Amino acid sequence: MSFLRVFLSIVFPPLSVIDKGCGSVIIVFILTLCGWVPGIIAALIILNNPNK
Image 1: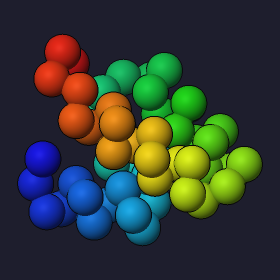
Image 2: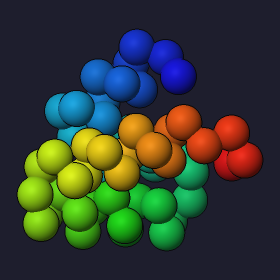
Image 3: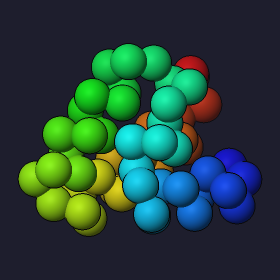
Image 4: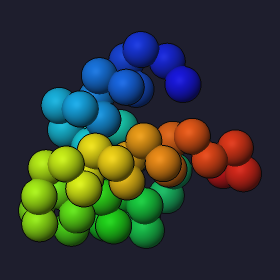
């Protein structure tokens, strides 16, 4: 995980997972709308997943 990805996940979480697929972006976007912190947590979890 690069510094840019971590910074993007804090500032605008859906933008940080844009290359992980449409489903990930939608999930992170919905969680960001519900609250900023759940969006950040979801983005960091998705970015730390080595399978994708």
